[in-house]
Image (cartoon, rainbow, N blue to C red; front, side):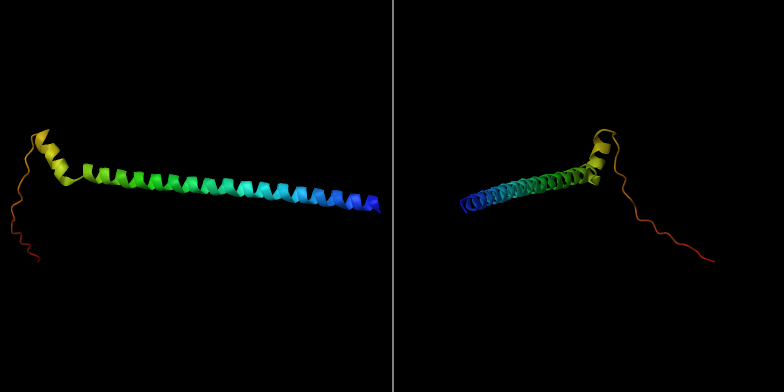
Length: 92
């Protein structure tokens, strides 16, 4: 009976060890995946902020007043005033 008892003790120790190692491994992988998710969310936010910043710069660079100022200062062009003209179409 003593041998059976020792065998059962060893089996229970082995099972507990396997369970503990499995639990710690799964927990470690879960934490690693959670850290990667957080990192990707931060990168996504940075990219989104950069996109907004670049769109704002593009809109500022493409604004009509800036283009007119460059044309006036660099190319010595003047803005032409548009006179309203009456246009009549005769459809026959």
